Amino acid sequence: MTPATAAQPTLPPLRGRVQQAAMLAPTTWFRVGGPADWLGRPADVDDLLLLLRDKPAGIPLITIGAASNLLVRDGGVRGIVVKLARGFSDIVVEADGIVAGAAALDATVAEHAAAAGLDGLAFLSGIPGSIGGAVAMNAGAYGTEVKDVLDWAEIATPAGLVHLPASELGFAYRRARLPEGGVVVRARFHATPGDAAAIGEKMRAIRTAREETQPVRARTGGSTFKNPEGHKAWALIDAAGARGLRRGEAQVSEKHCNFLLNLGGASATDLEGLGEDVREKVRAVSGVSLEWEIKRIGESLA
Ligand SMILES: Cc1cc2nc3c(=O)[nH]c(=O)nc-3n(C[C@H](O)[C@H](O)[C@H](O)COP(=O)(O)OP(=O)(O)OC[C@H]3O[C@@H](n4cnc5c(N)ncnc54)[C@H](O)[C@@H]3O)c2cc1C
Image (cartoon, rainbow, N blue to C red; front, side):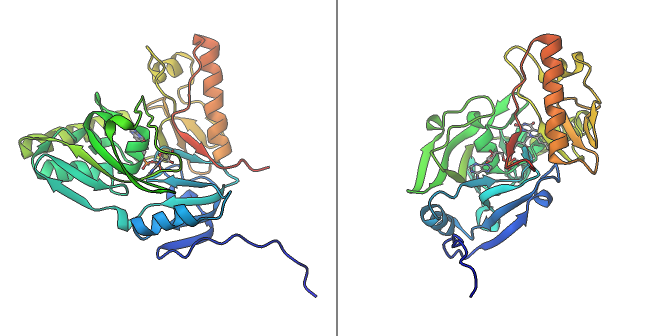
């Protein structure tokens, strides 16, 4: 007789791809982190809605985009990690704006806008995330944030698809208030007619400035800490003497000290521990308590 085993919860039958015990590290910018119990890539909005509605009760679900602002802990993520892929990457150019799927990359949206002579979205060209992540994080650069250019977002929820104007998304600095369990699937950004060559030039300048000031080709997670009111996080970190600080193979970037780097063999524990070392030093020197901007998900290894 075989021993009785606890029944494994099963997910609704998706048309998209579902992997069990899927390693997340290769999908993240930091290249660290343990496995997700399930990694689901719904085929399209209907597939996603089915998953949200019929997933087993009590199983958590989190959505990731390009994972450019994400630290997945080494013990991995319990429950379902949803990654939007091909069925969510359409970009439609309109006369005065762009409608983009949540999986479209910010830079690709900026390129479409520039090619169509639409001005106002060049700031997206230097942000390496997806549109879903940009809405969820109210991403911004060079004085413009998503909240300034977003008309509406379409959000899949367990109760169905909702269409919300930007004014109902509770935007704040690097934060949006999405409906409970909501997954951004599409968004519209307004833009104004402009000169394609001039916009292209603006984007080139942004990329050059980024290359010079940020470790854009490294294994990193973007800005680690939010800028506290009236301060720049990088300046506080620099003043605390933490530029270049290391913990194992994790290092505070010499180029931009609000970025953490995985030099190759760092674990999520090293990176998170280094971040905490930095917070401690900043608190000791300036009295300011830095708040993580990077989203940390999952469990530490026991
Ligand atoms: C080199 C570098 C430079 C960067 N520069 C900038 C910058 O100038 N400005 C800036 O704002 N950020 C910057 N970032 C950070 C990052 O690119 C942005 O926060 C980006 O918007 C995150 O998008 P993502 O798709 O990678 O989201 P992820 O990192 O995958 O996720 C971030 C958060 O968004 C949520 N999320 C993702 N997709 C969805 C969705 N479809 N529905 C609901 N929630 C979702 C996740 O659950 C998570 O909470 C930089 C990062 C790097 C590595």
